[in-house]
Length: 378
Image (cartoon, rainbow, N blue to C red):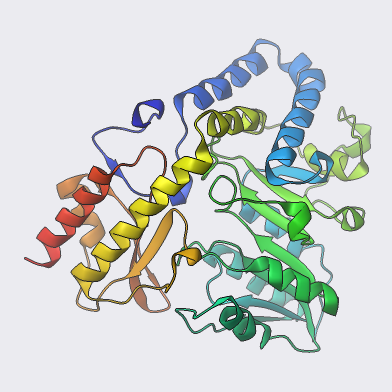
């Protein structure tokens, strides 16, 4: 599988979770769209683009379990969520409930909006590792008050790599009339996703991570009943432009000034790549690699895992590092061993996060384990 990707074979790449990696066949499709654009920019932007954006939305909708007309294509989930935040009309006394595990850039976006509009952001502390789904759900729902208007929660967390039971959270929120916004940046192509079954109000996911689409391809799902109330942050031509629709919702968002949309048009190619390579079976192999390296990290550092059962993780694991860890560990792994793996601080503790995708093999994990032993156990 490694030969199907453009990654440098001299690098042990264990950081798919950050920016993904694009297979050669998908990247070629991406470049083909760019060439078509440059050969005839006007015809492409006024005619070819719109019919093929519809194909991308429809193919993506089938893959993630929703109607293609309910999807907006964005360059990243951060941009998508910022568009939602500015449309919620939250005011003084309202509360947005999230966990302490949420993605830092979006916590910052919520915090900035809360300062301007005087609502409160509540980061409910969740004590982990979790004993069960109910343990997590009960801890999280304890943060709901009569003022809770929005729940914002990750399905797979970026920092801690944990899979949260968002379906149960959405069910409860609907009963209470609370808006649900799910950050699924790490979900598509990583675990199964069926948006109709999930029944959330808003859902954003990245196609350029585990789906292996080109960088700058993500989506926002908006429930039909909410589409008329969602206005873009950037006002452009809308129904007065070249976009034929079919809805005001799509016309308002799809064109926001001239930009290269080739990454969006390459989404079907990425999905074809996953299906052609039996991604549901191969992710099991990747998860087994992650479970094994997690055990190795526990043995090397003598620190406890963040999870008690394998249901909480997929193809990515974050593991806590001991307090006496060398501060230049990331740089040493890169400079001395050519290993690309993130090491970061979260909630005043340091972590290493290891990802595994199709192109990773057991020897990649062995390289990491041996390198860590030579640095830390020396």
